[in-house]
Image 1 (tube, rainbow, N blue to C red):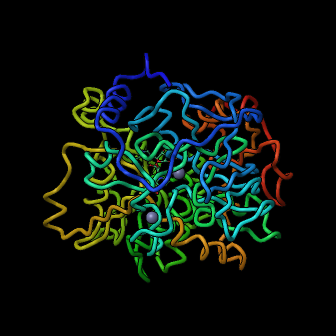
Image 2: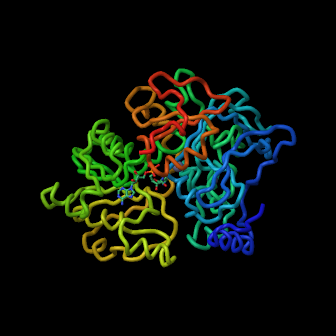
Image 3: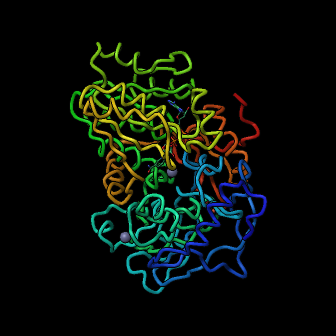
Length: 446
Ligand SMILES: NC(=O)c1ccc[n+]([C@@H]2O[C@H](COP(=O)([O-])OP(=O)(O)OC[C@H]3O[C@@H](n4cnc5c(N)ncnc54)[C@H](O)[C@@H]3O)[C@@H](O)[C@H]2O)c1
Ligand SMILES: [Zn+2]
Ligand SMILES: [Zn+2]
């Protein structure tokens, strides 16, 4: 793989990683590639340059692997950080995608509880199933599947390996493709009951456990007032989970009209458009009679600073991330209120409000990458008993060929795009009540 002509941050990060050498892991990240079977896959080629390429399909590489024929895949807000080249460790040719499901096509000799033909959802993280964290189902924190010495150096610890999320999280090929290799197949797949359609369950891979984790880990109690920054799929679901956990009021903050409308109409939220209201903490204080909200959840995105100060600092590489949203959260919560950060951040920011955090006794909680394994069975139960459905957020269905155009449209947040079901040659027809296929080229551009 070449890194020539890549953005300098990626080139430097990859060079440092190479020089430090890998951290030890229990398994191999790079799959064996088939000499005979080809597949379509979405690959990163550079900043804002992703392409649908035809490449070899993966094969069983280690004894505990399963190979999946993908029947449903999607794009996540986190993919936009890769698209924008804001996460280090990307290499030209990396296959992206960490939220997907399918049918088992092959199993390694040591796979015990899955067989060819099983229909499963895959967690976005690759857990070994045995380490201290995996034993507690804290799968995203698995100690044994990510070889990034760069993450070890910068963070002091390493996350688990993630599918399709750069070499900073292990360099595993992702699931925006027709086939994928899933290491530790018994551990990282969840069998799905026949009566549920793919759209019902695909988001157990990431968005549903992530939004649930954000609410549970930060702690929402009966009667709380909860404010959510960012009304993408994560924020919208967080509004719903907060209500299910007893919040008496939920307030959503964003600027995208279709998302604000969804929050009001489908999630029972009050909303604030940050294009119309410049001082969000002031507005939230007004809305709560000066008390502040009990819980603030950051479900936004670190690479879209609002103000000139952070636009400039980011541009000059004086900071990698903007602190604007977390600062608004800190100012908006009541004394001893809770702030949960589920939005992804990369490294560091300036002007962080450490004083108010300390003086107000704010409980500031980094939620981490969500441990999918801890929640996915419980949420599947809720989908089955009807107490939660992802249907409200699925806005479109497109073919895999449209992936590059989808990245562009998802980034521009046009046509009311929220969560998208991306079909492959192996997909079933749309489930009842879910969108029919459209082509991104036919979507309105606003
Ligand atoms: N921790 C995890 O396990 C995990 C997993 C999945 C996604 N994420 C992260 O969660 C976040 C949300 O994901 P998503 O798929 O909903 O993303 P998305 O990109 O679809 O939505 C983000 C929303 O935030 C809004 N926004 C931007 N700046 C804002 C601001 N200053 N105030 C309020 N809103 C603002 C945008 O308009 C957008 O609607 C992303 O940062 C993503 O990386 C984390
Ligand atoms: Zn994601
Ligand atoms: Zn583990």
